[in-house]
Length: 125
Image (tube, rainbow, N blue to C red; front, side, top):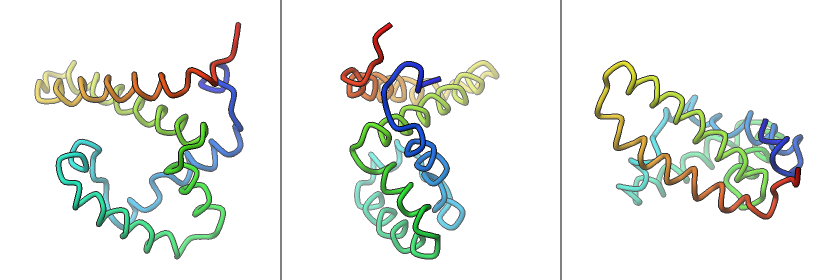
């Protein structure tokens, strides 16, 4: 769907999407809000990801580098990830988990920022 709205290399974006969470198989998932609150932890996780990625084939490592880079494809995969988080949070809130509302607000801000970054890549109708 995002490829219909934005001009980017779909193959590179798919490579990044497939690879972007691969290190979580070894490290588990540390959420974005935790990484923001604890920048030293975020740096350590980055170092650990680099170590873990060495055991994967080059295409996986390349996909991860696309994800963490500043290319349009990396931004697209980040946006897709944020949209998925919003869907999850929406379900949690609908089930009565009020604690998720503050995270949902942060996620909405992240989505807006990513969409602003992608403005130059919008496809015209």
